[in-house]
Length: 428
Image 1: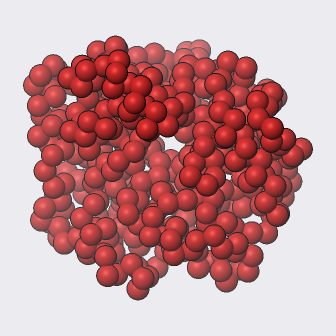
Image 2: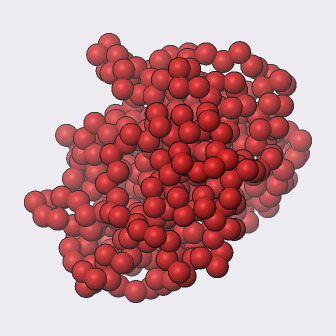
């Protein structure tokens, strides 16, 4: 197993001995992100802190970190997008292309996703049961029910979430109506082509058998979270430090509900894309996996049980599939985790920002005309009606995904499995 590579600090802040940055010397690293990592690593009770190569500053805590505590949970380290993550669904053949493909995707993503489903009932069902909660809801299309039955087989390690807390019931209809929506920021829904498979023949065969990854095949990739629920959860728990079993159990129950909602949201998003492509049938699909970027779990590390908080950070346990997200103009990479405890069994969740949103708007608007932003250098198409997002989420606003993935491999955290090249990206 490789060693973690500590990046020389370019900030006055000095990281404590139990903190490190998993990035090689080719990764651009912002001083403010290192400052935030040092501050969080010095919180009372922190036993280990790892900055990923996509580390970048957040409003109060850095994004792209895994942070472990022995006896406490800090909801603020999960943040306002609880349950955010990614789902991948693969399939073999696609008949649509060009303008027809773009038109079909646009038409199927601009209308309400579940117009015949009661939004309050939808929220309650997926809060309690995740994607499988869709199966018994009146008004859910048969093809979505079949998708939930086929691909909600992942082991549900989340604790019971129970009924929706009263604090959320006043806005239940609003939360439920957002089910199947992308949201803003760096979230997206994407159709990709599987461009490259890595590893030897055995590794490629395993990628095909386990996840349906074959060169020339296709994948739908959804990156989204719990929408307004995560923000409400963050406001509800604030800056509290949870040291008692009762407080931890209460928070984890609510976090589990938000994570289940987020998983269902990603499945509905993928279904919308698959429906647009005419392949939303179990017989046309090959494999799937879903992972969460913002949560906290009790995990074994360094011979002890620790509360591992991930903030913009993907789990990568031994042989676990994960995906490191690129941009609308660069590849995303499916990787196989190595369960490296030195990085808290985690990897970067994406390329990581190198420009703030305001900087991206200011700098990229001068270099690109808006009408050119809906086509990328790799030939993909972008469906986005928000001109600010077109600038803020431009590939130039992000770090080099190749360097980020190189760092993960060099550190022994995970190994490349497949490259997914974007064909159509939806941001709305």
